[in-house]
Amino acid sequence: MPLIYYGYSKSHPRGSSAKREISNHVLYPYFEHLLASAVHVSLAPVMSPLDERTNPKTGSSPLGHQKALHPQPLPVLLTLLLLTLAGTVGAQDNSVWRVWEGEKRMIVVTTPEWTAVQGTLTRYERRGPKWVKVREPIPVVVGRAGLGWDPALTRQSPDRYRGPVKHEGDGRSPAGVFPLKAGTFGFATALPGSRIYTPLTPTIECVDDPASRYYGKMVDRAAVDQDWKSSEKMSLIAQYRWGVIVNYNMAPPVPGDGSCVFLHEWSGPANGTTGCTAMSPKDIVDLVRWVNGDVQAVLVELPKPEYLRLRTHWELP
Image (cartoon, rainbow, N blue to C red; front, side, top):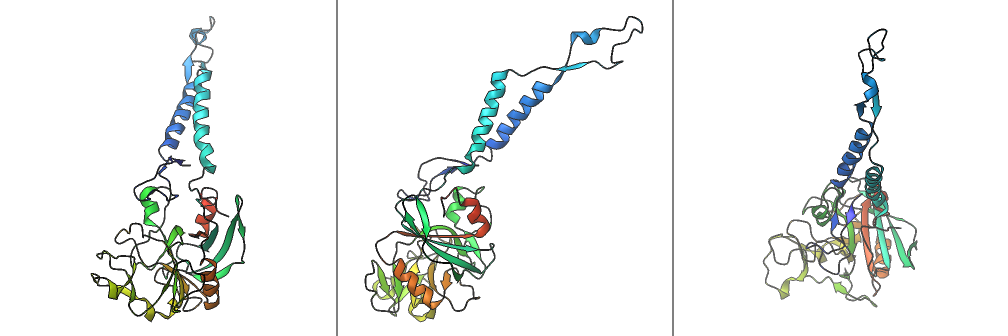
């Protein structure tokens, strides 16, 4: 399994819990080669002086024309060293790749596979060192094309995160870990107790034009110089009656990686989204209020097989 170097990468600014990871896909074959070489040398057949003896009566060797072969042991210390090195790499199976930094609430969304549209959402709270489930799972839908890895993860560790990758306009919801610290929004003029709430007036838009300097941002069209050719007129989208902003590709945004990712109301229990995660009207109202305060919350979204694979490495519930 991969080793981890605890340093911050350029794609994850300081303050992010994503660490620069070093893959062991090169180290494993290296140690396997050394170990195999050790076994080969230790068992390599060599000729013994006894093999040169011949039978005085027949004039032939004890094995006919074949020489007797005897293994020569590899030095014990070298063998132990190779075994230790190989064992050290193997022990990385339970290494932690992601460290939580103050998050107290977690939303876990899983789907059966990468291309599935329907999934479930479960809420957890951090209590001491453990994540504790605080709500039963609810049904959700993701992108019409399923899920795709956050490109920031695949750029950092391509061998570790294999599968489809999220891009602008591909109809996939991003897979990975995303803070929920940009607040909530809705058609109401205010949300009592909200830490950050944006009322969707007619001039609020979310820019999805990769060429714009406002790419991936919710902006008030009346307050900025418009430089985009494509955006979502949010007040005209009925499913945005209530919503949560997902911090995906926002700090800073990478053009083309995808934009305007939210948790919001669905148009139906089998209808995929353009790249968001959606749920019933009742469930989104409850969720908006749950992530509304000052407690740090995070979204984890993965296909179930990937969730099970990463459960230990990401310290998931």
